Length: 206
Image (cartoon, rainbow, N blue to C red; front, top):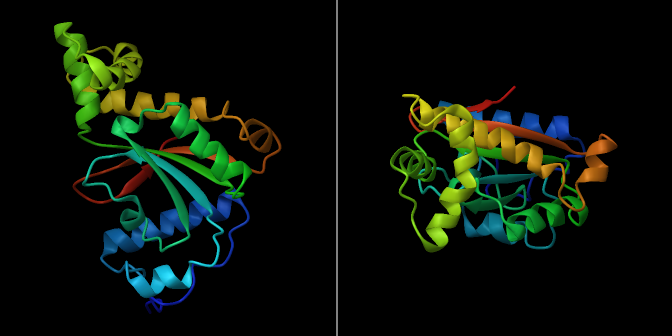
């Protein structure tokens, strides 16, 4: 059974466990080819009066990873923050803090993906000792610690570095203003995950 596309967003999700279960269920619908939600203007209008998102997802700008689609979420369900290689700066961190402190989301997900171009660029920079300048260089610099942690000469360095970067970012989220206390109190959870470009499946990291 499918959801009426003009219906309001799903009922408020109040716990991190429920929020994660909804994202996992949505990804299963996406992978199985049976999504419930479309991107129709009627659905946007139905959610326009207010929002009660149940998660904030920090992901990459990669055009093959549209977050609302891969989690089969409609308007008003999730806050999305995207940057190259899901690198965080003050704007990203402030956005996550706002989602938690002002919108009351109980779940933060950091989502990496396979064959990430930004991570590959960082691996190549470490291997060749040739780093790009300017703002692209900033992305590479922020990803370099994960590459160094796994070793750039490892044949699987791009995959391993991407996962290491997800784990590092999860830890960083714990120190965001507005997030630290809710996490300590058990009201907010932070998880890492990886998206498979070939299968569409999202795997949660341990």
